[in-house]
Image (cartoon, rainbow, N blue to C red):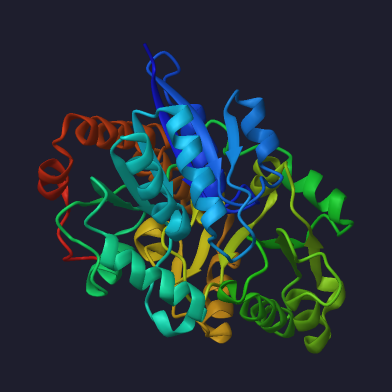
Length: 394
């Protein structure tokens, strides 16, 4: 009989952790595992994706930013009704609620953390309070799963319990994300740009930590140097009036050279059309799913040294300091100026690195192992033995 995993997450809006949850649920063997989702907030747009997978979604109907007694009672009631074999928390609020659900449902609990903390002062006051509460409660879950080595070290330095920590990097479906002949021509036609123009892309929701201002500044620098490039930004919030991307493009006088797309359901078809992928984040990244997906599509990346981005990229791209648009532009120029043979080698290396080290199958298998250890009562001992050393973490 299949065991039940109750996934607890803040909401089902579009985001890296939310997508990772759904791909993980889809990757679990249905004869052995059945997933249900408890969304603290009213379910967002990805609830439809969950329904398409046959995953039932519950909601605590929690007001935005407020954890109420009524929401707590709903969480406990849902957990008792579902009777899970394991509760899997996703992100800070989801982790705390997962501990409550685990206690109510009498099931072991696993936390997962998808955020890096190079400087906690950059977080909102409410987020800092949740992080400190989480550190105080971090002895309650059977295991704490971090999606990056950097995030693990940073959280442990803030008091998160080290004994039960494991690192499971985000996984990418390399069958869905892969090179596609003709993708570049199709993307240029969609954007209405000339066939010879080089496309430099970025995927992610609009958020200050993504530092899309640096991305736009780097595009402006490449244009000043005479390169025929088009910046392409995909994600929720960028297509709205007054967005940071549009404001930055206007300030640099390059509005026509920045194409802004909103949230898309066909990112896997768009990514292979890029000539270069850029992740300009200033902070907060742990293990970027967007970088990994672009690499799986054979797109060379230029990234900032935030979280585990440098480890993810390895020798298949370039890493620069955060908040340095000039360094970002120089790294982009080096890759864009490579001859065709050199670019082909880099493209193949990018895909091979993700397929060999960061595939979705490995992600799912490692979580199943963590579930089984937690349910067998061996979670703490096994997690401590499996915990990789901090040496080498960025």
